[in-house]
Length: 201
Image 1 (cartoon, one colour):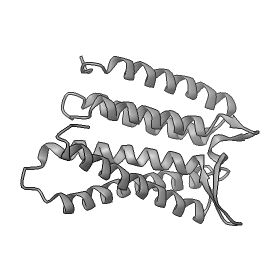
Image 2 (cartoon, one colour):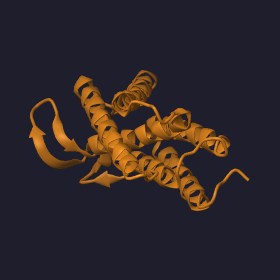
Image 3 (cartoon, one colour):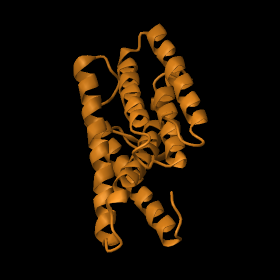
Image 4 (cartoon, rainbow, N blue to C red):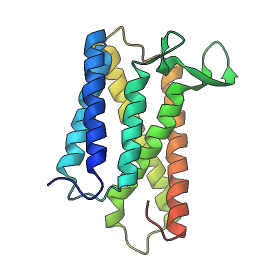
């Protein structure tokens, strides 16, 4: 059995999400997000295949599930006639070039915070008690930023393959990177908070 204790509900929710949103994207001919579904399935299979070897906590896997839902919903569900990814949540900054805070930016903040936690949990078994946590904290932030950069490459490929994609331009990319970084920083703060209390994630 691939699953550990408490993981069956996580598996069921993910399968239902992928099937449901996959049908929705195909029905709307939203091929950009069909491609993203393929990426999610790839990571889903990778995590499942290595489940007995890695030490990802159920809490982090639920976080990954929430992130996947937010991403898939962002490209299909509507708010005031526009997809969620264009939803302007709170007006913090509003100028002709960009708006803060948008749903898209919130997804990047949460998503790459979760990705940073995953990176740390995969790395943790190889750490010893003498590790310098100040240096490690910086490296874990950079790890999260690197995963975020990989996501931007995938978005770039989506633009190249499907020119009519609504990914956005330079400002969108840079704001994505900013919110990826903020998410990674908050994840490292959480890691250290839990570590100092002697608790696992």
